[in-house]
Length: 397
Image (cartoon, rainbow, N blue to C red; front, side, top):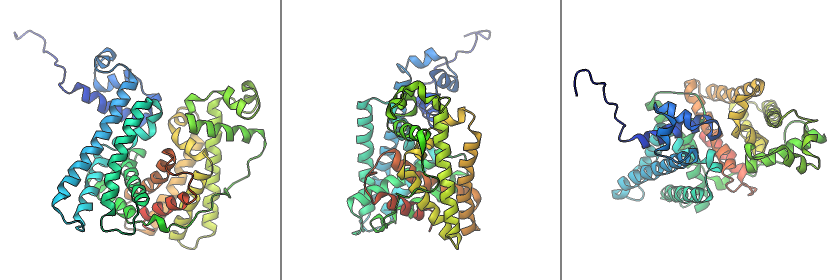
């Protein structure tokens, strides 16, 4: 090479891994439907055709990103449990090491814990089976570690706590609060330690039949009910207006007499769930004498609204769609609702920095949101009470 030759730009040896990591980050931030191959290429500083040299299409990138996250879960678990092999079964350091590894993963790769849950609908059946099988195997190992020295913890309860720990680890990707890594690790460690100490078998039944807020009535609410169920089962993007009309006994075009678009239906579903949350919060406040009691009742109210109808889960899981339209009032109401929780945590523990309080609240909410998203035991009558109890455990109540 002479002094006048242009520099040679060499392709990084790990280009494929770089693309997978960037895809995971973008899919986690925006949702699969809102990310293009061009977006991933731009983030990597390459052209679209360069991406296609490694992956057939965007779906192949998603599959690689999700499986990379599962591999991280497996490696994190292997490291922690291998280190514990020389320890006595009753030595608390066995569990401490696993919790530390989970926290480290949650800070370095939060998408490893949540990417599949949010984007599994875009994977093939075979890919979903592989992810489910491998993830379940990892969490079974976590569950067995939790059962050591705890005769009170049965297999179902241990699995439930393991899933809750995974939700807490992934919760850092669900909000914008950022704190230094050491503080984040310490906070996640405390929250996971709290939740794995919960005895879900002791949870009282939570009555979820009586929803707070106005009773649904009329054709408009019928359309919202039908749409909410369809969106939850099949995803917002996979449901057409004709299907919504058929579900309530009218034609697709007749739906437009009540709503201007499918997005307007989604926005109304979100507004209805927000109204129910606000009604529940007002009732909780009126019935409470202390901040602790208020926060405990808020947890019960949240789980009631979340489990009684699909509305809240649908609105939460389609946040990227709502952010793309003029739903500022709804999004502001959702943020204000979460702020109320954060303020209560700060009132209960005045020495706790607000950022740590926010991390705590989002971790608690993620336990319930993830359980409903993954449909884990959702038909069991004891589930709402168990979710509320785990949330309260994380909140320190």
